[in-house]
Length: 561
View 1: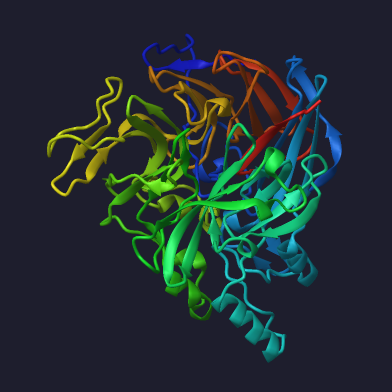
View 2: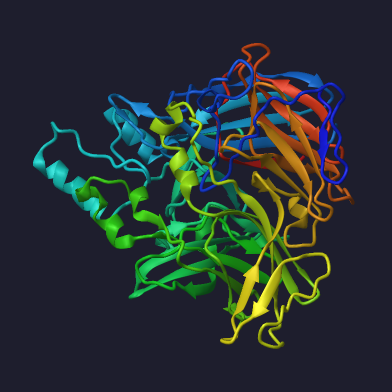
């Protein structure tokens, strides 16, 4: 077992301990991961081959549990990420493009079983049957076999000019009604069995709603309804962002959940053919918060990417000369509030939480100064050794505060909360220029106790990041005191920490934190880590006799019994 290191106003290091690990980062558009060999980290240099095809383990493997799992911890942690990168003589360019490999840890009566299975969607089936990449991904453009006839080549060209996107849903797990789906950021999602990991129905948002791109992260209310966001590109001559609701609970149609889609609100894009990229958004009891950042998709360039022999990812560009717009949407009126909020250029992938306090909306998120993070995960770059002049844009966890009343003088800071240095200054045109407060830096993939989503909260659990997108430790952050408690172990890389609350708990941090840990040691190997939510001390770990792969995001499903 390993004792935590406490950082912040009360900083404690164990006597005689020398910390030689370099703190690595991670976070975004999809997950940020390790190649400790690439970054030359830790004694012995842990090696992880990003481009290596992984094996699936569809039959359950019983894990070896060390420690004592809480009696109340019953359920399944399901995670999603890329696992297949080469088919025949073709390979993906970017780590995010790999074929989705689902895996789960099922916890029942103090025991843990593990299994993994490739998502067998249309993309997977087409690629494996052809033994080559035939469906394009964001960072990899697929071209027809040179031996194919001209008709096949024409069909391929047309499918890329007006693209039918991939159903390789390798980023996250979302819930609609009582069903679970693998998702990425296209108009397709795939229903899955969270226990066996078998692939079921393919759902197309476009059959129910004109959205070409859909955010990877979804919000949920107490009634079981789900909320998401998509982009309608040049639909009826307009490009807009659409917030929508999928009914849950008694209002859901289990067999076809997307039939229950209801448009909540639309926000016009500031430019017709260069909509903002986004990965998530915020929600409180009364508001939605959407960040229209200057990381933009050029639709015309995307339409011609195939014939120019470039990837769709090359059509995404960060514009540092542009501002970031912050849209505050009233959930009751289903319209934007009258106040216009903006801040400087930044790239945002993950929201931490948002809440309302005394006439303000407080919004915490992970921000970057540019979009260099995506380029780090090209597979050829991951194979290179990090050099002394390698740069990395370290993320910051920032707090922004949006006053819901703009009464005040020009030049006045309208933020009246005493516990934050975030500001919102009224300008001559009536807009509010917002400046965020840095709560901490070098962190990504934030998770909270979701029972406190949209409410004033105190704790966030994140992957510790500092010099590269590789997480060699995880951290519990107190957003009030800014104290941090971290957990780490030599030769290990950790996944996004998922908080699971104790049933009927009162305290926000009463529960456990789960993280999938990849170890370079062949024995006892990789494991599921279980930490106490309060102390952040290790409670138990479950060693798995199988290779665990790097993933992106996950979802814990409590045992309904």
